[in-house]
Length: 373
Image (cartoon, rainbow, N blue to C red; front, top):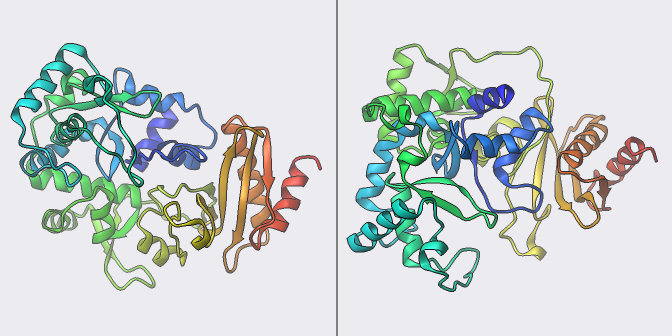
């Protein structure tokens, strides 16, 4: 748990996504940084007292450190006043009061619990939300309800904040908007290491009118240092305590929702790596595959692989493997080792490589060598 805590402090946000082709998105950044770990650590940190994490609209839907709750109150008030862009219903006092009263009495509940089993149907990639679900989402965004966890169907369990958020954070005096904005930017800089104003703003999805004065205050205080990054026109900002290693020893598969690559323009500028998620692209139009993970080796992204956890066959299946220009000679061997680590973490027995992509043949040989073949 100490390693988990250190990793969480550095990463700050774990984006949540329901896609489970390989592993749910919020588990992957911790694996990328820690290696194989017990995923129950994340459940304990987000669902058991004392909570270290809580779900909120911190980037998009994401886990964030629970001590950020006071710094999100200005955002909660904004949602309370204008609603959330996905939620048309916000001025329905009767339903709002009724749902809060029912959650107070029942405890943590899903919309389906409160709807008494009303039928639903999926529309496109989204949901046909009931009025109950819409109001619960509004109450969650506005901080009047919190998320106590998720059930086996990955549905949110809504509960009163005082039953979810530790008292010391719930009762912390609310910082000013400037103070809250400075703290969010400060943490974004620690997590990113270096980034432009847009990069830092995007980490917690902040508005420009909040980040500009906060950034000026942090620079004036010497907490962020203006720097130029080769190939980037805009000024970047460096956390004053950021380490500048002579060499980077890294080997990691990155989820499409990993903070290192979620801002695609930053990824392209820093790594010369053009990356788009193709989950919602029709199969015949996909370039690299359905669920493609960049592979970080040293300080470059050396390859990308289209992966699936094939639980029926007990393997991590590599549907496609592609080397990036200038990939080191050891890329296939290092990638194979990382894939076996991933398979073991997922409780699978091995790795199976399909003959698609310019790295597939070399990766197949590396996998066979590690597998004793």
